[in-house]
Length: 187
Image 1 (cartoon, rainbow, N blue to C red):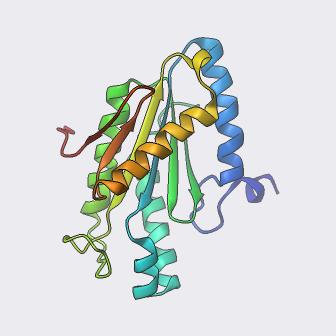
Image 2: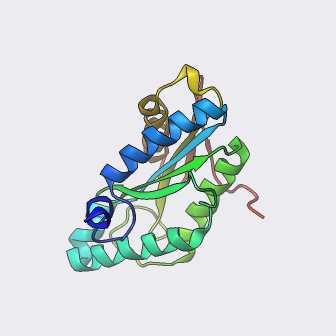
């Protein structure tokens, strides 16, 4: 019953309820230990168009393939890390005690790995006509100055900035500015 209550039935990733509880718990632990906390939030570009064009069963298969990629991605190495389906076509990754460089590099690698899946997306409004993602991320080193919800909100604002600036890119959400990156050297 515990697994059913905390797992998304379609993707077998942690579900939103599990994510919410984990974020709160991890934020408290990282604050106590004076560690940083990072969040990568992303969604599939033009997913409604994908579902309308290919049908919901194919859309579900697409979500399962993204979930499989996330499980194989190996960015979540520490016990406090978590990958979850945030809702619909949105996914979230919590990273415990990361550097800003690690989170930025991981977000860009993830964007590139999704492109390398070469999932056809004829209904995309992007020229590539393959499945792409827009990503927002945020990292905080002083958890006494921010709530878990505020950190998540910074990643969310960055995600919507990536979408507004043309999609298929990564944007950073910081307390003072919003910057976007594409094409980082991810080696």
